[in-house]
Amino acid sequence: MSEPQPIPPKASPLRPIPNIIFASRWLQLPLYLGLIAAQAVYVFHFWVELVHLLEAVFGSQTALQALVTSIGYKSDIQVSELNETIIMLVVLALIDVVMISNLLIMVIVGGYETFVSRMNLEGHRDQPEWLSHVNASVLKVKLATAIIGISSIHLLKTFINAANYDVKVLMWQTIIHVVFLLSALAIALTDKLMSRAEPPAH
Image (cartoon, helix red, strand yellow):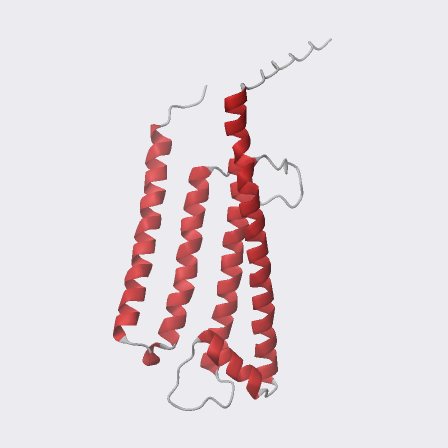
């Protein structure tokens, strides 16, 4: 016969003050709900830009001017038709929205799982792969990497339309992107050093 499994000890109830402090983590819930609302705004913005792009393809001047204004495209001559540069800038803007949306998902799901409450997604077929080993350190590195990707998209958009930007703008955007990159490397290195310093679990 197999031996009966030991019953795990029941957790003792928290004292009033620690219980209030621990329960205060639920104050973050409205913040995550607000980020979900912000993501809905991004979804709406994505579809508005996509519809404008499709309308501009079929010759709509109103949609074309809306695209030119939204992407900040500058030209010495009046833009009367869709060109490759505008298409590329619009597509990069759409990719930018998607990457920011991915960043929001990481903050909402990872932050809730790490700082508020377990979501108990183990075994769920749609559980994100990264969520199984997420913690505060992993979340910081992933967020830093996502920010670098977003900054790269913005820098690429500027370089595509570089002829219409001041040299100082190009220089400062490049410097800021390099600072983001160095910051992400510093965060990753710090996390690696801290994980080495931690004693192995017994």
